[in-house]
Image (tube, rainbow, N blue to C red; front, side):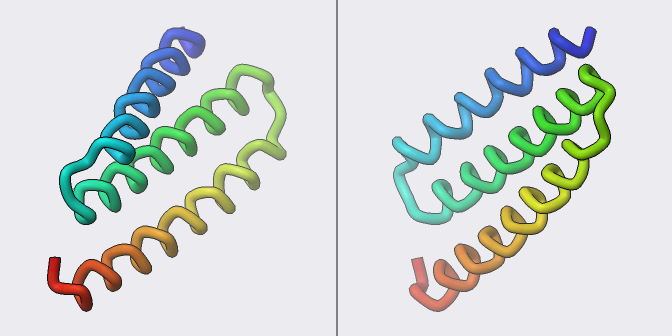
Length: 83
């Protein structure tokens, strides 16, 4: 079941990546990158559950934090730019 969840999360990641590339506006791209990071964190956590190793959870925490800060920066940029 974890493998199925990983496959679905990977499919979602590809959809977010496609939206980030083809997005019609900058806010769409910022939200797509945020969704991609969330899907990436889900993949890392699922991989930690599959392999039984805990050090993946630290990696997931760092990726989530960097994604959060990146989303904040992108949102502030969009807000100041007035898009």
